[in-house]
Image 1 (cartoon, one colour):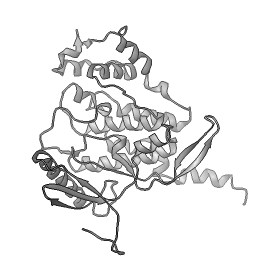
Image 2 (cartoon, one colour; image 1 turned 180 degrees about the vertical axis):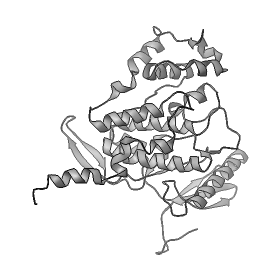
Image 3 (cartoon, rainbow, N blue to C red; image 1 turned 60 degrees about the horizontal axis):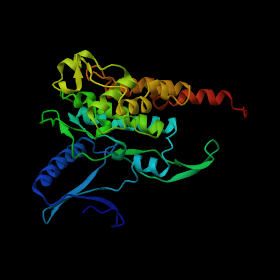
Image 4 (tube, rainbow, N blue to C red; image 1 turned 180 degrees about the horizontal axis):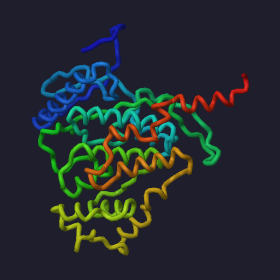
Length: 320
C-alpha cells in the first residue's frame, strides 16, 4: 500500500466480488485506470487516481485516493435544491475536461451520471433561502473528479449494445445504431440539466416512453436515425408509435416540456447554458457538439478569461 509522509492516509477501497466474470471486468477497469495514470501523471485531468490494486483471496481490490460525496448525494442531502449556475459552470467545465481527456485517449466512459462525479471536499455553508423559507446547503469548493471506469471502453474494443444508466442513455444507444464518444456528451447534457433543475430530465424506465420524452423536449427524432434503426417496434410509418392519450402519454405530456421552457432566469449565463445543453442533446451523434468544442463555448468564457469581470469591478471601485 502507498503511505503518505505521516505513514497514515485514508484511502477508498473498491472490493470486487470473488466471481470470475467480475474478476475479468476488474482487470479491464485496472487496465483503463493504468492508462489514465500513465497519461495524467500530474493528476490534472479530474479523473480519480488509482493508488494500487491487489488480489485478496480471489477478490480484486483497487485502492484510490479518498474523495467525498457524489454530486447526486449532495443534491439529495440538499432536498434536491438545484446548484447555483456559477457552481454548475465550474463543475461542467471540469466534467467536460475530464471526459475530453478520455476521448483524446481513445476511451468512452459510457456510464456518466451524477453518482459518478465526486466532490473532492464536501464542506458546505448554510445559506438562508428566503423564497423557500429554509436553509440550503451551499458547497464551499466545487472541485470534482470523475470515478467508475468499470464500463469505460477503448475505441478498438467490443462495444456492448446496451450501455449507460437508463436516464443518461443517448438516443443512438436506444435505437442500437452504434455509439462512440458522442454518447458521453449526451449523458453530460442530462447531468448538467439535473444540476440546474434538481430533477432528472428523463424520468423513465421504458425505451419507447424515453423516446417520446425526447420528442416532447427536443422535437421529432430525425428520419435518418429512424430509418437506420433495427428497432422497428418503436415506430409506425416512420413516426414514433406513441399514443398521447394513454396513461403513459399523459404522464409524458405532464412531465416534459420543450427544453427552453425550463429556464430559471433570463440572465445571459442561463441562455448560454441552454445553448450548450441543446448542442449536447443533439439527436445525431455526428452533429452533437464535441467536448473540445464545448470547452470553447461562450458559457465557459468567464472561467477561461476571468479578467473580463475584473475590469468591470475595478471601474466601480470607490477607493480610487
